[in-house]
Length: 289
Image 1 (spheres, rainbow, N blue to C red):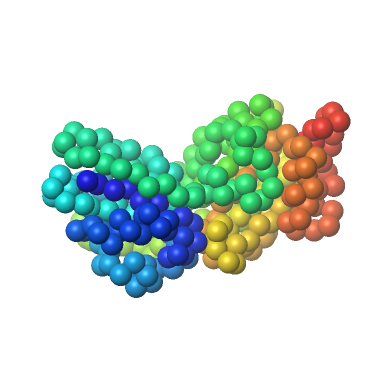
Image 2 (cartoon, rainbow, N blue to C red):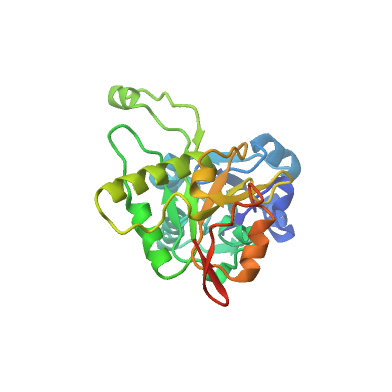
């Protein structure tokens, strides 16, 4: 049996009781190490679980899956995922590989950013499509995530933005030379994501486009959700561009239509007392920015 086990969002103790029982009985335990991170490292997990963990990077999961699946038809193998196992679409491929190999699988769910984001006070059923904001480079500056935010805003929906993670990435030079030398990990911050969105706003304004968002759009920055030092900051896009929420991981929300209860909840995390003053009412139960 191949077990996909969610670890939750905080630390080693966020694994479910059922998940921990399964980890202790498996012949091999892999820790997926590229779509997200916990606030503690591999050593802390091994100490709490009482098991050795095998790090599974993107190359192993996507190119060497046969090794990961080896023996799972006659013994139990666990694949640990930060958050919920299906919070990242890449894990569906591993499920299909297991089924095609005649291996049974089981999923042990846990909290993920997709539902824990409700901690900021926005109602989960008011969210539209989730988007990913990637690090720009000198030669690659995609804006497709902005277009998805616009679609959500047109429908009055909030947008959860998952911010880029660069783990075990190679420089172009090392990639060209075939050298297995990797760059230090990088985790996008709310400030960096906000700055990229502000640049897109400027570009679209110069092109004469109808803007989906602007500098005064109310957004929410979140960091280390589920940890004891979790941080939430609500303000305009311009304000979040200069906000420091500390260490990773960060996420961001671009708000859509807001219910008065949501506004009251956002006020609890406002970066300034007047951060939400730009909200305007469209009817007796709806605010927008």
